[in-house]
Amino acid sequence: MRSLRSEGLPRARGFTLLELAVVLALLGAILLTVIPRLSIFEESAFRSDARRVASLIRQLDDSAAAEKSNYKLSFDIGGNRLEASKTDGGPYVPPERMPAFVRLGRTTAITELMENNGAKKTGEAQVIFQPTGAEPFSISLASGGRTCTITYNPYSGKVKII
Image (cartoon, rainbow, N blue to C red; front, side, top):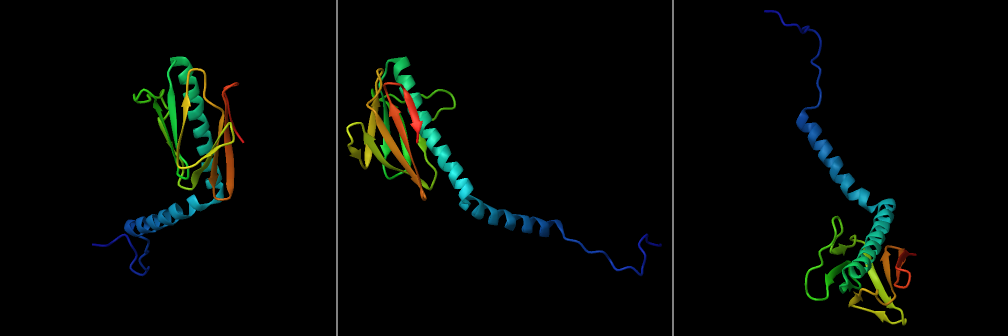
């Protein structure tokens, strides 16, 4: 029986599916280690962390006023976690798509919490949100060489990222 392939032509060789999968897996692993280290992504993650902290502060202020309840925001200064709870011991049940805690990115840290009287807190700190508001405060965040300050003004209800 005669084959369709000519006997004189060399057989065309290509890559097997397994070889292509291995190469793609290696490229994926390399990209996973390189991309997070790019400064553009770190800057974006830092801004996102600051917006999430400001959003949680705003939400706690609004919830305290609307529900006539007290809320506590706990800070891990030097760390990267904020946690909200009710002061009566009950859990803070956030509205849909709003977290009860914020874990900042791996490179972002809370560097200080400054109260209205100028006192700086270190270690574990907390702010109580009452129906009438909380004392004015500011939080400093740092990531790499970047810093920002989030200020809370209870008189206007504004949370600003500076």
